[in-house]
Length: 316
Image (tube, rainbow, N blue to C red; front, side, top):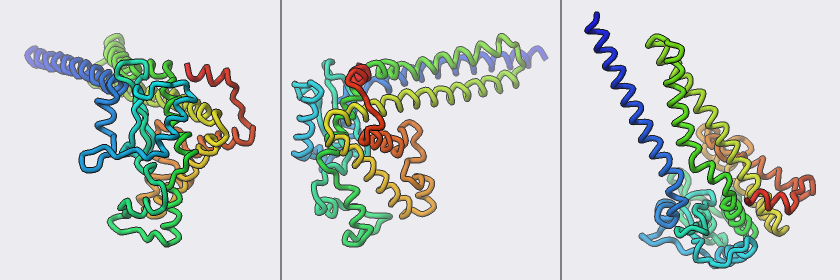
């Protein structure tokens, strides 16, 4: 019995050391993951998400560059070399970095923002489940309309990303929230069972329960913080000019309509991706598009008013 107890204790010590080392690597990995793109955006973010054609980055359309330069002036940026502008492979605008740091910053628009007319959409090679789309059909025309951005949409998306970039309070918290949370979860999960002096099975179960509760709490807090940042960035972008407010409304309306079309086309599979209104189901981190749209519509009708002081507070 003594020999068996010694073996059990040895295995337990080995498991604890293994978990501790794994958590250490996890914390280090989270620190790198959360900060690498912001510290070296042109070396990390752009090479990974930048849209390329034949190993070359896709050229940003002139009208996008024009809107970019105009919005930069609204935010008080003069040195455009410190903020790179490119097209990404995804479906959302992206930003990273700090204009004040040596690594600079990047702002990117989704790939379908390169379309300037219906002909561009038709020639882009979009297919549905391997089949060509009949662009002259009612559905094809609807898809083309959803994929064609206007200048106001472009300006709003750029302003939204620059507004998020200025939220230094959130970015400081986000840099270390996940690794700190993981470390505290590890300490609590290992300290609590020892204090209670539970048996092995109950000890493991309690640790699993604590880890699960910790994850759910982190998921809620992280989502809540990011939602506040996104809503604030929407408001700040929309307050610059009336056309940018309309651009935000157009951007969200078109995205919702496109998601509704994709939901219908994909059948049962589409229902697992999108709600009936067109919201993404799997993405808990991003606020619902319908909520963001309603907030902008409320600003358009005067139901929501944001003072200049509030905007300055949100940008600090």
